[in-house]
Image (tube, rainbow, N blue to C red; front, top):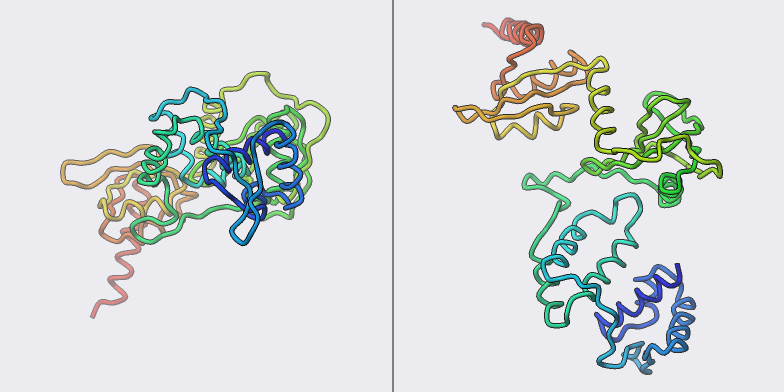
Length: 321
């Protein structure tokens, strides 16, 4: 852990030049005293770091000092910098690790390419906080202490004890065998087994977690993508209703914001979109489609078409003069 921090400290000084102990402490998420001890350790190891006194002082490296290159070319580094420019700091509690990795990526480039790669990455924005309609994504917060325990158990292959708040139920402690972690549209999930049965837990509903010493009862190898597809299929078939609908393109996002999932989508010749979406139940589907008025037309099931027709007829009769 300390070795990684020392490397990050050197990279910060290489890329930014002179920095104060307070600035380094904030970047590395440690105390100022720890930074001073790390500086002493680097000096003892032969790294040419020195202190500049005064109001604008700080720590710096002697000019020309370089760390070992990793062999990344310009496009490879740009791809990593771009991937790290989104909300990756919110993924599974790996924010500080991502920041450290990005510093190493920049340092891996030849000096002549560092500025151009950094500038190029700043000109590519991935998953901003708002879309063109000024809607902010729903980001679920998971405490770092909880996420660290979950992540450690998944990667170490240990059993996990979680305090989980299922919908409509009081929180309960459960012991699970973790299989993997999945993030979809800023929502994180823990795939696990409990008493031999597959279970999927929303990370934001895990109130506390503790890694246990005993090994998890799980396969040595897992196809996480296939496991996720199978669980999605089971979830969508569990009492939910599939609806085939034609919708105006400008109302597509409104439809998707109320649906549980999208199974298929294709354009039609008149410019509209044909989508197969899943709702929680028939009542949920009727409410959601009614909000779209004439911008959407239900093609199936017939029972939903009838329900919407009856509702429209009742409204028309109420306001008939």
